[in-house]
Every structure is written in structure tokens, then in C-alpha cells.
Image (cartoon, rainbow, N blue to C red; front, side, top):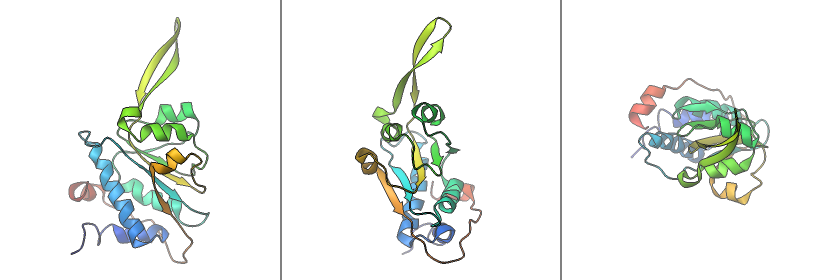
Length: 182
């Protein structure tokens, strides 16, 4: 018996970067899981870490996944404060070329109970303490492993390898994905 998406999505995920069928299934299942944030059905959300050397299709794979995950948000910041301000609760953070990102917030984002981050903000009369909720899914592209073992243990890693071929990013139908799998 074939799994849902085996004909539609998995070949297109594989065709973007040359990853294996098992890796493509993992990516598709992760994309489906991002829709669990609707109605807060999840309490933990691992990081999908796409990792490998230059020229192995990591960014192409990310482009395909961006089309089908729930509420994708491209994150450019790498510092603690920048990430804190860009990470939005419930969204899917899309981070390309993020080999040197602050890992502390990624660890906090993984679990709903640790995802409320306090910070000081300048006010008219001094400083105020504010909180922001950063819980959500994260897909990150890196060329090097995470430094912190806590971050590694909270991640699903897709290791990419160079495979000769004609890889391309095709347009996928988000609405169909949401109806069938999300």
C-alpha cells in the first residue's frame, strides 16, 4: 500500500536535491506536522536541520519545503535579539545559510513550555520587561553541525550528499497539500 504523497510530493522533494526516498518522506512528514500548530495540538517541535557540503542541493530542498509548510517565514537574523524579534509563535521559520545562528533560541523554540522569552525594552521612563512567544517549527540549512548537543538532540537531521543529476525546484500546490496532508 502506498503512503499519501508518494506519487505527488516525494518525487518532487527528491527531484530538488537528490536526497533519498526515505529522507524525502521525512521532509514531507515534517511539513505535514507543521499544520498541527492549528489548534495547538503539539507541545514539542523538533528542528528540521538540512545539513551538508556546498553544492548538495540544501537550498533547493528548502525552496520546495517552503511551498508546502504551514505559515512559512523567512528568517534572516542570526543574533539572539534579532532571532527573538523575527521568530513568530506557530509559524514555520525558514532559515537558509544559517551555519552560525544563535542556538539558544532554537532550543527554547523546540518546546512550548520553554518558548516564552523575557527581554528588556526601552520605555519612555526607563525599561520594561516584555515577553514573546517563539514556539514553532524550524527548518534550517547549515553546512556544519550544531555546536550545542542540546540543539542536536532536538533536531531531525537530513544529511545531503552530492549526487549527479538534473535537479530543479518545481511549483507545488499548497492548497492541495493542506487538504490532503496538512
